[in-house]
Image (tube, rainbow, N blue to C red; front, side):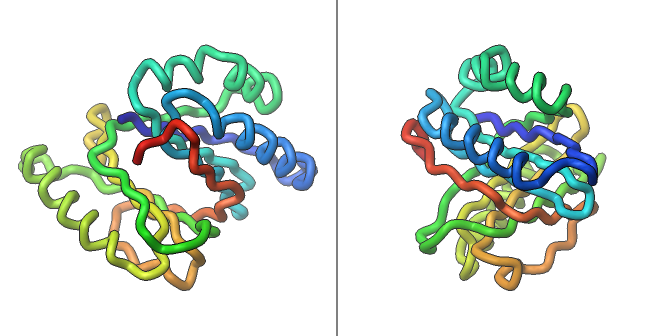
Length: 186
């Protein structure tokens, strides 16, 4: 599985209602996209950025999206977004009911003396522990081999449910859309 996150800066002068409507329309069309396991539209209210987050079954599904009409429309509407991709170590939805309204992305650098096997073991342990949290809807752990970073994404019922993090970098988002794609298996 591969994770992907776009970063689309809107600017303070953009009409929020129009943008939210456009994002909702795009999310609805993505729900039946082959190879899409997870999609959530994340919005950073402080920086006016949409940062949609996707998990794809494989590289072919991600590539099909990037070279297809949906991504071409994003570029035409919003300009070229920054697109980051990661290898997914774990991604699970919990049995907690409801849709998330709040997301937290944590990024930690991998220490130079630490083996990737140690990192994966520690992160999988952390993942299993976090999955027991009340209010957590979904959680994923990804790895960026270019930057030697571990990325964690937690999707929470609301901000009050979030457990405090201790990562190098922590970003908080409002979840504007949360999809359970028809083709997803996670």
